[in-house]
Length: 531
Image (cartoon, rainbow, N blue to C red):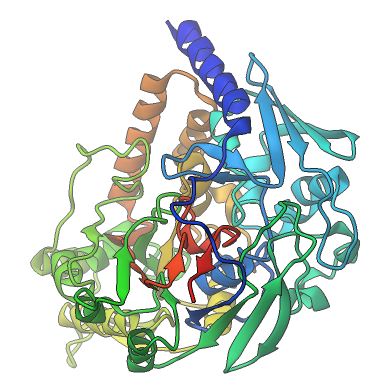
C-alpha cells in the first residue's frame, strides 16, 4: 500500500509538472490599456529592498515587482510559469527539470541564465534566506546543461519542492552583483536589479518609492503600466483618506487597519477582495524567546498564552476578519488537525501555572518583568500590543513596551534581542515549506529574521518534521504532522493568536491587480489602469 501511494503521488506530480508547463494566468476580462501610473500605499517603509534577506511584508510588496521566482501559483496553489516557461518531474520524483524563458535580461542589461539560478539555490539563498536552507537541503545536486536549463537531482522524493519557487520563497538575484560575500552591505540592497516587469528608479525616504516599466521584459507587450509609485503614509487616517479620495489606487496587507475597513465597504469607487493570500496563509502570534528565563519553562509560556483572550482579539482588534489560531498549522494549510486540544482563554489557570512554578506575586503584585516588541505595522498592531500588555499585567507579568521601526524590529528579532514580540509569519502552502522553519533546531540562525528565532528545540519535533517532509504515504504524513501539533501545543514555543485574513482594496480604475495566490506581491505584469 505504501509503495502504491508513493507511485500514485509521484505520477500525479509528474503530470502536474508536465501539464501546467503550458499554463497561463487568467484571461483578461477587458482589453487592457497601456500606460498610466498605479499609486499604492507602502506601510511601513522598508529598511532594505533585498527580498532574499528580508521577508517583511513591505519588502515583498515592493520587490515582488522587481524580482521573480521560477514559478508562480494560481489560487489553487498549482504552479504556473515564471522565469521558467516549462518544467517536468521524473516518474520517480527525483529529478526536476526547469526550462527557462529565453531572452530574459536583468534590469542592467546583463543576460539572465541558469548560472544565476545555480548561484541562488546552492550558495546565496541557503546563506541568507529564512527558508531556503531547509528546502534546498533536500537537493543532492543542481546542474545547468545549458544556459536555459536547470536540473535538480533530489536526495529523496520531496513533493513540496514544486511549490518552493514563488518570488518570496526563492527570489532570483543577480549573480554578477552578489559575488562579494559581504551581502549585508551590497549597494544593490537599496537599488535592486531584478528581471521583473518593473525596475527600480527612485527612493525618497519618508515620501515615495518609484518603479518604472522594464522595457526589455521577456513577455511581449507586458507590463501595461508605465510606473508604480509606492507612497509612504505612516498615519492610519491619512492612508484611509488617500484611498477614499483617489490619491492612491491600491491598499493591501496591513495598509488599512482592520477597524477602518468597514468604512470602505459602501464606497462606490472601491472594490474589496480577500483573494491573493492563499499562498501565504499567515498566522499571527506572540513570539516568546525560549532562551530567556523564566520563558524557558513551557508552563510559563502556556500561562502567557492562556492569559490572552483570542476571541476578543479576533472580534474587536481584527474586526472579525480573522480566525482564532489554536496551533502551528492553520486551517487553510494541509495537514491541519482539528482534533488537537484547543487551549482557550483562562487567566485563572495562567495564575495557577505561574504559582506552581514558584513565580508568585511580589508586594507590588508583579511576578516578573518582560520586554515586548510591538509589530510596527500600524494601529491594529499597536492596539494588539497594548491589549497584550494589559492582559499579561492582569496575571502579574510586568511589560516594558519597546517600540521600533520595521528595520530595527527585524534586526532585534533576528538577533534574539527580545522577550516577547508580536509577529505574523506565512505558512507557504505546505508545512515543510513555511512551518518547519519556525520550530526545527537546525534553523536556529542568529541574525536571520523569520527563522527559529524563538530558539525552540525538541529532538522529536526535529525528527518528525524531517520524516514528514519526505514521507509519500499521505496517511502516515498526516499522522506525523498531528503528533507535531500535539507536542507544540503542549510546549507552546510561541503563543498563536489568529489566522489572518487581509483585505485588498482597489479603486475601480485598477484592473487585474490580483491574478495569483501571491496577490499584490506577484509582479503586476497584467495589471492596468483605465483613464
